[in-house]
Structure formats: C-alpha cells, structure tokens
Amino acid sequence: MGSLLPDSVDVAAGIVFVYLLMSLLTTVVREAIEGFCKSRATNLEKGLIELLCDHPPEHAVKTAAASTSTKGSAKASGYDMLKTFYDHPLTMTLYRGRYQTPDKRSFMSAGNLPSYIPSGHFAFVVFDMLAERGGQSENGSLDTSAILAATTNLPNTRLAKMVSFAINNSGGDLDKARLFMETWYNATMDRVSGWYRRETQTIIFWLSLIICVILNVNTVVIAQSLYLSPSLRKAVEASSQEYYSQHVNADPSNLMPANGTNPLAALDLPLGWNDTTLNTMNHLFQFCGEKNTKKCPPVTPVETPMPDWAHARPDQWMAYLGQSVKNISEHATSLYQGNPSLGDHTLFNILPLISLIMGWLMTAFAVTLGAPFWFDVLSKLMTVRSTLKPKDGGGGVSGFDGLGAIATAFTAPQVTEKTPQLTYQPSLVASSAAGATPHDDADMAFLAGLDPTMRPRDN
Figure 1 (cartoon, rainbow, N blue to C red):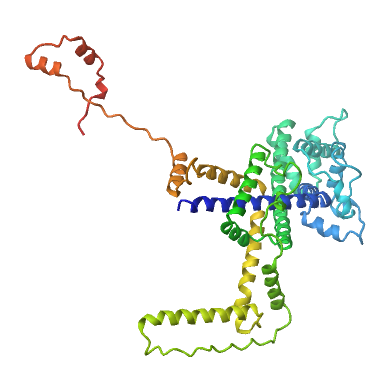
Figure 2 (figure 1 turned 90 degrees about the vertical axis):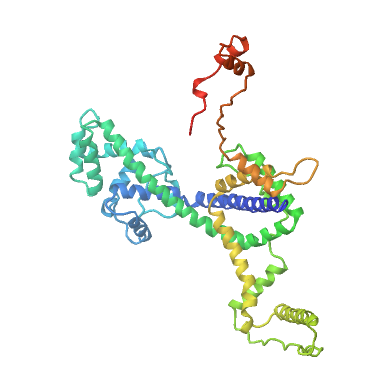
C-alpha cells in the first residue's frame, strides 16, 4: 500500500489534467462560435421581448423564421415597444447600426445587437418611453402621472401592471420606482443567463464529443496507460505540476497557457487512432453495415486425445484442466482476431466498442463541468500529492502515514483539559501533625499560589 496510494493520486491528477486541457480547448471553440452567432445578444433580446412585448420570446423565433414572406410593421407584429426601446438614444450607444425587429432582419444582422444592457438604462428608458406616450411635462422631466396614464393603453398588460405597481408603491418617488424596475429587470436577466448556460453546456457537450472522436480522447484508455506506465505517469505529473504552478494565482477565467499552445499535444498520451482502436472501429462498421454471412472457421481438433479422467490420478486433474482452459482460450482468441461473423460471437465484437464509446462519453460529460472546476480539483490533488511526496533519503511515505497526514491537516485542534495535581510537602505534613502553623517561606509561597477553583471535586 506504500506506493498504491501515490500512484492512484498521480493517475487521478493526470486524468483531471486531460479534462482541464480539453475544457480549455472546447471553451476556445465555443467562444469562436459565440463571436459568429452572438447568442448572448439574441438571448438578451428574447428577455426584453418577454418584458416589453405582448407575446412570449418563442414567438420571436417563429416570426423571424417566417419573416421573408411577410414584412409587416413593428406595431403590427407586436414589436413596437421593443423597437422604441432599442431606438432610444440611451440604448443606441450600446450597438452599431440601426435596429431591426426579429421578423425583418437576417441571421447575420443580429451580430450588431448589444450583449449587455445595464439595469439603470432599462428602467430610465422604459419610464421615458411611457412618459412620452402619456404626455410628459413641457420642461421634459419625467412625470409620474404621465407614466401612469400611458399604462392604461399598453397592449402588454404585464408591463403596465409592473409599472403601475412600482409607482404606486413608491409613493410617487421616481428613484424608488426606478429601483423596483431595475430589480425586475435583473431577475429576468438571471433567467436569460440560465438560458445561455444551458445552451453553452449543450454546445460544449457536442463539441467535446466530436473532439473526443476525432482525437480519440478515451478516459478508459488514458487511465489504463497512466496506471501501467510509470514513465508516462511521471511525465504527465511534471506537466500538470508546471501548469498548476504557472496558473495557481491566475484568473480562473483565463487558464490558457502563456504561449497560447495546448500542452495536450506535448504529452505522450495514448491519443489518436492506433491499431487497436482502428480494429474496434472496423468491428463497428461491420456491426452497422450490411449483414455479414461469413461463417466462423471450423475449430481445429486437438491432436492429443482426451485423457481418461476416471483413471487419472488426482494430482493430474489440475494439469489436464489447465491445458484444456489454455486450448479454449487460444481458440477463442484466434476466432476473435480472425474477424468472425456477428452470429453467436456478437459479444466478442461489441465489448471493445462499448468500452470505446463509454470512454468518449465519460470525457465529454466531464468537459461540460468547465475548466475552472477541473482546475480547482487539480489544485486539491496537487495538495494531496505534496502531502504524499516521498521523504528525502529513503522510500516513499506509506499509505497509512499519508492518510494520517491528510487527516491531521484537516482535523480541528484538540483542547486538553488540565487535571489539578497535588504536590506532597513534608514540612506541611510535619507542621500539621505537631499542631503548629507553617512559617517556612517556601510553604507560605506554596499556600499563596493555590487556586481554590482548581481543587479536586467529587464526581
């Protein structure tokens, strides 16, 4: 057990390091896709449609898909409030060009939309739009009566109710009403962030699965190779330690290597396609392709005659049994390597296939947790690895010593209670027996130093 625990920690650290690098790779690809699709901006627009328009955001997708045939006005399609919001001077400073409603624009034109709108901008623009509709005062200042008058004619009853509730419960104070509208906007933006996270996790899963298939990043194969190869384990450990020391104090959102390269390429991990994996994929194509009618080759009969078990000595039984098992194993191996038909030997074909697919899926699901998560796990494993590091001048730390060191590091300090001790003083005993009062300086100092609260008590 002295070397099993550190080796297991090294294997776990190597797998976590691979997950971390794969997460970084998929994050870079995801950000590249985001720069082209602008899903943050479109999700923000869907949230604003839910707040300002009289139909749900799903309607925006349907109307945008059918926008090529019908070119109605923004008011007819229910986007008049949304267009007024984006055309407001305070909002126009956040994006380039002119705003077009989802039912009129193309897919590429959505890239100019803003990805973030402050809550203060939203509250002020909404009040300004409503005050303009309700007829604000001549000096241009916001008037609560004008805002309330505009809510009576709004097609979106939810927006009218929220604005009326904010003004009436604030006692006519626009600052308090604006704060209420900002809170409502932030709550909706939390939902928008949830939409984006779910969309991002879905995209990252499929991206990681595609990368795992292309590069053959198989968790099962990597774990087996790390466990069986001490040299590979040490190389991956050194790379992970170097990467961790360079990024231990870095921002969790910026974990890419300093030189901009992927350290995964520098590791001698069993990635890519070799003879074993290609043979497995050959079985996969045969399994999914046309039916194989080729029959299994006949088994070559064994030249040695079957021993007479009845007359054999008991000490020969195990030898005969071992030889029989060996012959069966050799024939089964030759059948599998000879590419048999599926038939009764389907199990021999799909076991490596199941292992291959499960390894890909394990890697893909692990990558969806994100690079910050795996960097935090790697930092904890580095702490455990430093605790189990071999001592100088000798062998490694035993497994029990390593576990004891970890338990000691995470155990709360124990408070020991002092037990009062009585000291034997011969002079006091002699003085008490003679009925005299002790006058010795040492005895008087001892009596003066006694604490009444420390005297022994009966249980």
